[in-house]
Amino acid sequence: MGHRLDGWLALDWPERRRLIACTVGLACMHAALAIFGYARTRKTVERWTRHPHPRAATETEIAGAKAMARLAAIAGRHGAVEATCLRRSLLLHGWLRRRGLRPALQLGVMERPGPFQAHAWIELEGQRLLPSDEGYRPFDRKEG
Image (cartoon, one colour):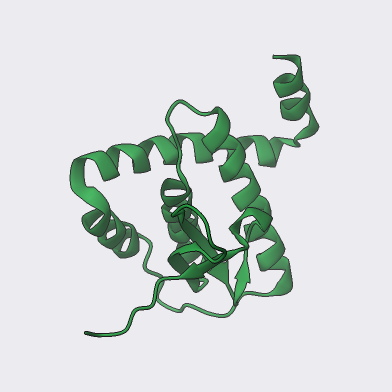
């Protein structure tokens, strides 16, 4: 408990508010996925977060997105629901779109041989937001 309290105290008030917002948002994503499934949840997130003038992110905005991704990961580990990479990625995807940015929600698999490992992550201007997102390749979306 002391370690968690130290982590909380190390955050400034805006970060604490974003962490709480991530915790609530992840619970909502968890419920939406359980009730509606992936496709309908993603469409709803994209509909609600549509921005009239999406634009490229600045370096400052990319750094802010990486900070938000770290907070979402913390909320996912310590929140009320099991926040898998898909839940975190859907939340970040909506958060960044709402700010007028153009995130890419990626779904893929581990690149190296071994047991099958699927993963979801967000890329912004071609950059992955978390170091843990490295080592995965996106699914090939070729039309059949």
